[in-house]
Image (tube, rainbow, N blue to C red; front, side, top):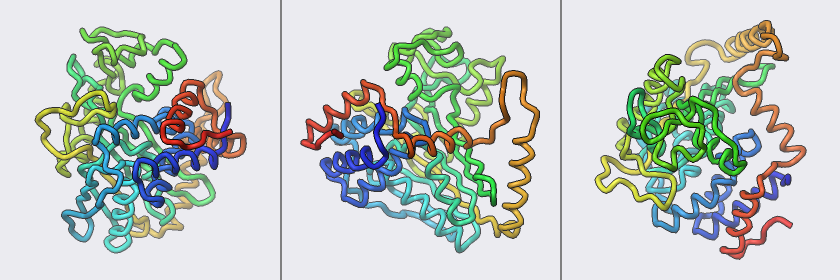
Length: 358
């Protein structure tokens, strides 16, 4: 069943206001959340709304945070999210990075005391409006085993980079540093489908195709799946994200990162405050004239699009193409939601006396 952006946005705003968010923060959070749905990242959209509510009910989200810079230089800052929704903290911190880049050429912001911030790409893309390159990283709940490990030590720790072009659409890379994001397992569970080999290992470190493998004590695998296919590289990338997001800011890192699910308690001996993020904004004209750069980005993108595809493939894609095409389609035709997600949202509406979409 499909729903319009406006319908889901209105419902989401009202639910977030019910838990105490200001109207401005609720609108910001809803925009970030719905960006995932329209771009086809269904695991990080309104399907997660009830998860944020449960965290608030467990007193692990502050609906009225005092967002502030606690340390800064002309081009860097550390932001304290005061336990707020990451959907609100991240846009604030990214704007700090952009404002610093306007003055210094580049801006770099590390964040502590935050929560899950939605899809990484939407925050990096904010820089595009200012002829800047945007970077967005975050650590996450420890669900990933490093290469050769049975312990869960890292999150899916995504990396997003958005680069403007001129006539071509922007280059937008938004990727987890695992073979698959945990949200994809949630979708497989709802559809009652198995996971491909290389996504998960069981509690003993053996490959499994069960979408419940992580819930049963197993772990997600770093990008590459196993050592022979380069999982040490995915492990390395996830580690860099963890260090930039948390060791640099004073957030929790590695196995100390608090879980997204409310039924699991945070680590009894935290090493920092909340979840961590890292943002960067780089002014193009701090390196070369922006128009000149964007013209060459057009050429880069155009030439890669012309690369000869392998048999059975229609064309070579540029990072951001599938999401951009889905966004255009879903803004016109509506956003499809699975029945379990609809049921979950209806229950949420009933709980807070917010009318579900007719």
